[in-house]
Image 1 (cartoon, helix red, strand yellow):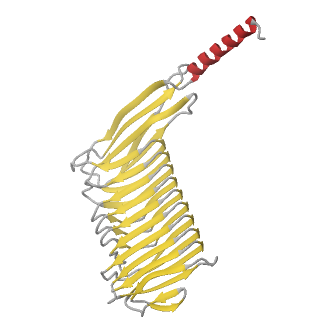
Image 2 (cartoon, one colour):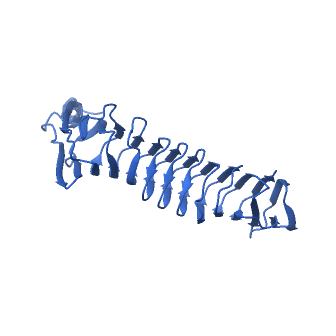
Image 3 (cartoon, one colour):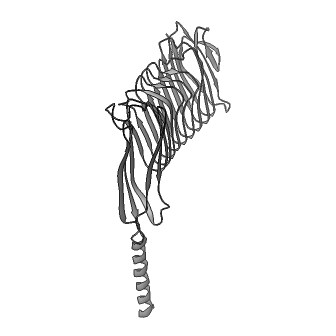
Length: 356
């Protein structure tokens, strides 16, 4: 039997362990909130926003008034920390410089090395003046990025570059916007969603990628592509939709790539795209589903499939196409072409293609 003395020592040890656990546990809540801004100036015509953020959910939006602050940063963070240590110090820095009519803003958010602490709630709202040109470069280590351009009046971007290492990216580009350069929405670990509204011009490459997550891309009516677009995921699904895109007399190469996941591509094209589109869909392990709805007066098409492992290629519908072989359907050549090359090593290919 355990002696009374030993029982006492065990009880004391349990009490001490419990007290230490309570003292070290992150139960104290520290709240950080604030606002920083750069006042409106009539001389500034463009803002270059470069954000380097360790941890926070980022909401990028536009003010409603044309003479609002050039940029306004509002933030709220909470950290749980041990009773034995003081609250960690979070720094939010907004540096800026002006060259001619261009304002360059560097936003940095730094979290300290957290000892016996955990991050609770993070939210950073970046509000940009709606009447000036935007050039966005956002980098986040941990957190989601949301771009909402609903109130953007100028509707002109130099580039859009959104990247998070751990989190989701969601971008909504308002109708009639003009993107002079590239449009990147990239998540290393998370989902990447892009919605491009009607009549948007994209001058440079379009890239929506994730290493571990799903990709969802929608190009609404009359989006103009002037360069290649690519979407890639190592482990996840991709869905791509377009409706009457314009190719602006270009030869556009497009790639939808996945290592392990399914890919679905949907093209509705009833208007003359004025150019040629070649689509490559490649999967190591997963299924491909392609829907083509094309106008037969001026859009020709060729769809080639490959399933090296011997899985089945299924043509659900191919009205307006000629069956050239088991793996190829095509039409006579017209002024514009929408061609597709589909390959999966281990999976099925489903095609629904019509020209009417």
